[in-house]
Amino acid sequence: MDAKLLDLFWEGFELESHEQLDAQNLCLRLTPKPSQPPFCSGCGQSTPLIHDVNRRRVRERDLFGYRVWLDVPVRRVRCPRCGTRREQIHWLAGRRALTQGMVGYIESLVRLLPIKQVAELLGLHWHTVKNIDYRRLQREVVPADLSLVRHLVMDEFALYKGHRYATVVICADTQQVLWVGEGRSRESIQPFFEWMGEAVCQRIQAVAMDMNTAMDLEVQHHCPQARVVYDLFHVVAKFGREVIDRVRVDQANQLRHDKPARKVVKQSRWLLLRNRANLKETQAIKLAELLQANQPLMTVYLLKDQLKELWYAPSEAEAKQRWEDWFGMAMSSDLAPLQQYARRLAGYVDGIISSALYRMNTSVLEGMNNKIKVIKRMAYGYRDNNYFFLKIKAAFPGKMR
Image (tube, rainbow, N blue to C red; front, side):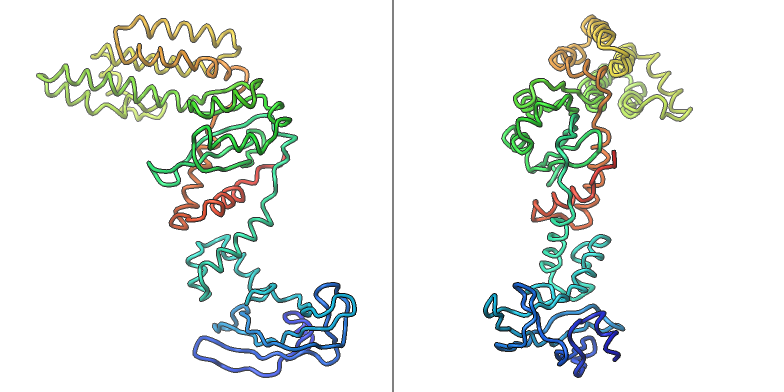
């Protein structure tokens, strides 16, 4: 094989012989070029003094369907500056039994495929592949420029549904994931604010979140000047569960002796919860007939639409007026679930009114959570949370400002 061609792969060495180990594996035996002295791995200086030679077998990229192994003589040199040191071989990946080319090939594959599939494809242990990808992520994930951060979005996602959760925080302006941590309690979220530091915390203007008490209290403690903005989707979804569903069930129970009417009410859940604009013509007709025949359901459905209007107020004063009007209508109704929900929501009214000043929501983060689920599903879950969290940061590096 041409010496110049070999230099593209194994600089400083030439092919001595080759051996087919079995139907899948091929071993290439290399030897140092006599004309090129070794270089010290400490200072990079060339030296002709050889202390000893150890042969290493390392894995190279596959060739023509064969898994290629290299039998490489690695010399230890006597360097005048550094003493006895291993020679410098640029194409070897440190002490790993892999070439740099093989490491780069693995890194390109793990961007596209799960670790398990890459390991099976290349005949490597999954832990070897995972460590290579972990180092790649540590090298490539760019730390956020906290000096530019003014607005945050916080949300949670399930590590193991119903058992363990994690909190993710992004910059609302760049959509870069700033931090991911296990847990959703105050103690779990506190390290994020400690990581940002007091100076950065004092510059935060607004934080969007769902009605999570732990997040709210930590923001108030570390960023007292910041405005909390509650997300429209979470508030309305909570209204659907605690008010519309409860009233629908109560109305169905009152129609126990009218089975056809009771069946219509019981099966109307999605009609009542879905946005009117997303209904088909036949569904819209059924909804109109249902609301016309049932006054309590008409009341909670209209107040659901009125509740949404709080987030579209042109000013804080208008938002306050809309809230007072909505609260008055809710409390004047004779519907206990609606009155109870209104009383609870009154404690969060400042975060709703803040939406008139800061047009923020968690919808971007909700979309990210869907991609996080895909990342987790591709790997059949992650046992190493630090690795998983690095994967998330790499998937959402943010957009250029």
